[in-house]
Length: 192
Image 1 (spheres, rainbow, N blue to C red):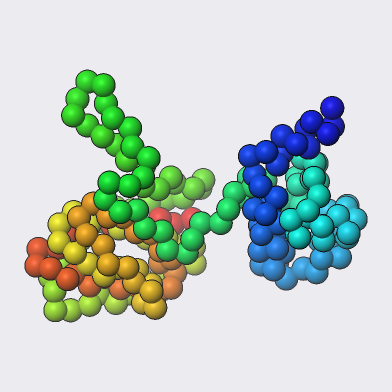
Image 2 (image 1 turned 135 degrees about the vertical axis):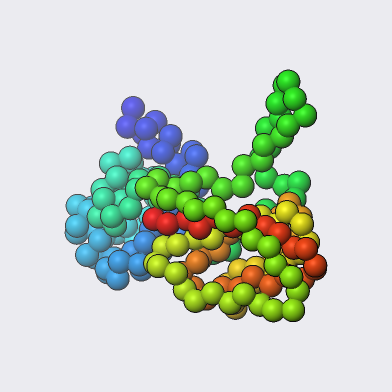
């Protein structure tokens, strides 16, 4: 029965995702392979194998590692989100109403323990709105309603148009530059 439990753990999360998550989170903590293994109560060779994409981890092993790394269990099983997320108009999971001409498209799900502030942005070409970094952990979400704009981190902004969505770290320098007259957008500032 334990073998069946082990298989169910990895059936929805490929070992390469778990391996990448373990490497990323261990690097974030600055702990050695031996120290993480010791704190989690597992063999160093087991952790090494898991970080290499091998093995067949049990729920208990993954739980011990997530506790040691101080992250939610699910974070080991999900691939990391890209630093900048873009959803183009017409993309994303959509759900239609049975009784009205109405479609809702999921652009971003709110992480636990967050606060979101909403802003309507209007901008004209000719100047760049350069923002200094906000508080640590702030993420900004922008949806263009009209016009076009260059939006995102100063070092990698993305051009977006009507209906496009972009999310990026607000705790790094970022810009909003209107590329067409009458550009408008909804900006959501997410605080953890």
